Structure formats: structure tokens, C-alpha cells
Image (cartoon, rainbow, N blue to C red; front, side):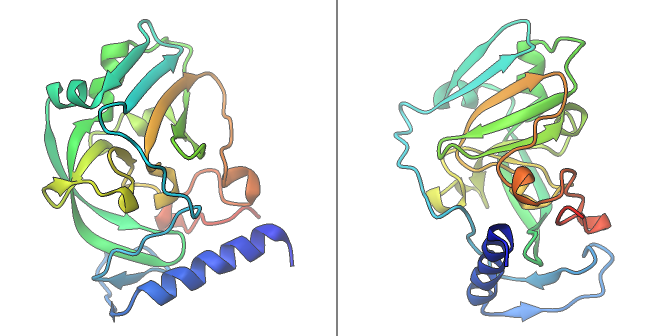
Length: 211
């Protein structure tokens, strides 16, 4: 068995252990192959970085007109929104109606000013995790730089103090412990993408793993 398959199987076992109560639904909100849960399982690389919120910074750099270095207090000065969306994990569980609070990603990127050559983004996390996403996806209205969940400060186990949330993609694209957003030309697969996960990660197409 390959190393990536072992990692994937272990992540699936973790999810199954943590979903103590399952419900099943034919609701058309549930992507194929997913199981609806009322729990909120915690899956990551096994490292929860210890981030001093007073020292947390979000760097916006690359093909931008103005590089930004945003503090937690700076983030609170942007237009604050509440966005309720469904959350789909590649390990086959989904949670409906997760309420995130924060700032629309496009508001921050527009403040930096995006070069017309840019078409992709790399998300960097405080645990050195990376993932990639097309720029146009990050500019969707429902994509949130979140510092709250269910009207409470985002806890570390769910990516606090700040994470990204991209509802239209499997959750590994929604980088926890967000540290930087790098704007660039051309695609650059991230941590899971180079280890066998699908590059696009659309839950409705069941784009879980590479062929």
C-alpha cells in the first residue's frame, strides 16, 4: 500500500471514530458519497500551532498592487459578515448550516489590488500546510476569511484564530490557521494535491483523489 493511501485511510478512520451520531438524508444539499453528521469532527495533519493572537498576521502578496500585512485587529476593521454554508470533508462526512463570521476574501484581495496576469492562489498556514485554488473561486461571495464559528471566536482545533472557508470545495481547500494568501500566475499544487488528492476538489463531482 502506498504512503498516500495509508494517510487517506487513517484520516477516514479518524473521521469515523469522531462521528458518534450519524443521520442520513436524501436532501439535494448532500453531495454524492457523503454522510450527514450533527457533530463537527476535527481533522488535520496532527499539528495544532500555538498562535499568539496579538502576533497573528495575514500576508497578501505576489501579483498584487499593494502587499498587505493584516493584524487580527486590522481584520476586524473590514466589513464583517455572517455566512452560513454546508461543510463537506473528503472523508465522506458533511455538516449542514455552519455559521461562519469574518470578512469576505474578495474584499481583502480587492484592497490589495490584483494584477491582471494572476489566475491562481496558494494558501499558506502556520503549520506550513499549503493548498491551491483558482483565483476566481476565491473571489466568490461565499468565501470567508473566518475568525468566528457559530458566533464564537474560532477555536484552535477548527483553525483559529483565522481560517479560510471555501464552501464549494472539499474542506482541505479551506486552509486552517491561515498565514498568507499568495497570488500568482499558473497552478501550484499544495500539500495534499501532490500526495494524491484531486486538484479541483468539487464535492458534487466527487473529486476526491487523482486518477
